[in-house]
Amino acid sequence: MVKKIFISILVGYLGWCALHPAIFHSVDYVNLIIHEAGHWVFFLGGEFISVLGGSFLQVFFPLVFVGYFFLQGDQIGAVATLAWAGESLANVSNYISDGFKMELDLLGGDGVIHDWNYILNVFHSVQYAERVGYIVWVVSIVVVAAAIIFIWVPKKEPVNRAGSLV
Image 1 (cartoon, rainbow, N blue to C red):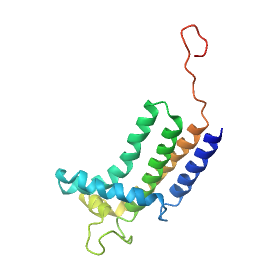
Image 2: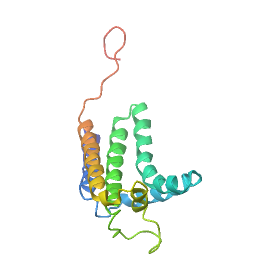
Image 3: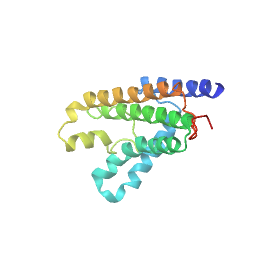
């Protein structure tokens, strides 16, 4: 029960962060490092893939851990990293929403590529940046809500062949 209360507080914090993606939260330092690493990880894929790779890795990285913890039967770890993935997606939604106005302060200062301005321009849809960002934000809230629900889903106990609990 103590673990569920602790994880509820952690997921609640991540949920609050997801609800307020325009505010830079402490967890966003980790997201930023992973985001920037994504540009390098996907560097050989060309400019478009490298630019997209930052946001992709930022969201994919915690999802890898969701899968790992799930396969290990660690419900608490899976829930925590699912909430982190949702918060990270909310952070990306803020970046997407800024794709048209380009008002966020970016690493490197003036003259650096704004990832989502570039990506949306490739698809001739930069004028829809706020709408796309809003849709991604709604998805992020759904992901965090799912994590909150999964905290309280009872974990199934293994049953042996005789039908009694192991």
